[in-house]
Image: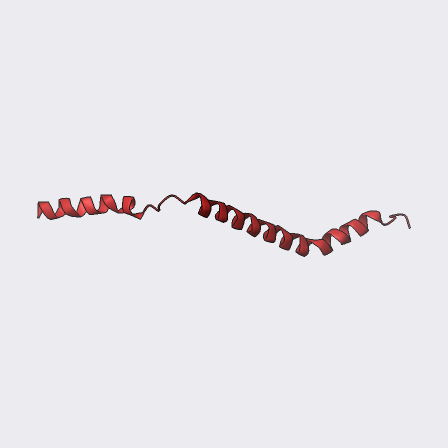
Length: 68
């Protein structure tokens, strides 16, 4: 029974080490960065597309003559 507990404890201790991923290769790392960069560009382009009408409206409201 004690040997079984020890084996079980060793298996549990080794599990995180086995779950580690291999380090990325330089080619994969370069591709991953460019994909992340492209994703960020698309995200911010979407933000600007969504915010453009509100920005134009605020710009128009700022240029209107308040005394007229």
